[in-house]
Length: 174
Image (spheres, helix red, strand yellow):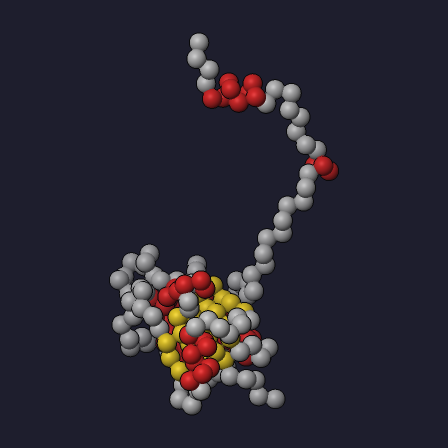
């Protein structure tokens, strides 16, 4: 009679006693997100953003934008991922309406906390029903309308590549 895998396993485990809860090593605590996904509390009267996307953005397109007057050195550091990321927002799982509110709230909170460089993960949009990466397009449109945004650039591959953006915010005014 040929032994099955289950028989072999039972035989190997004969005499093994399960650990008691008190004897178990504590499990590692999961890493807390830098910005928790929660119900957006953004007040639409603070900033009004249009959803009109005028650019044809592709899934793998590298994006970069800088407002006039930004020093080329700072823009180059941003594009190379050399600035410390102080906070991040991951928009995976959001619908457009909730994403807009969470995005605005995130940018305003980061500006209030005087964070200079932050990251927004929008994804590449491969699972979208349309051929256009909708969330990526919307985020780019919103960023260009935000008053505190000086520049943005697609991330380096280690930080999310073309599925995320580094964002440079202006310093908070006292």
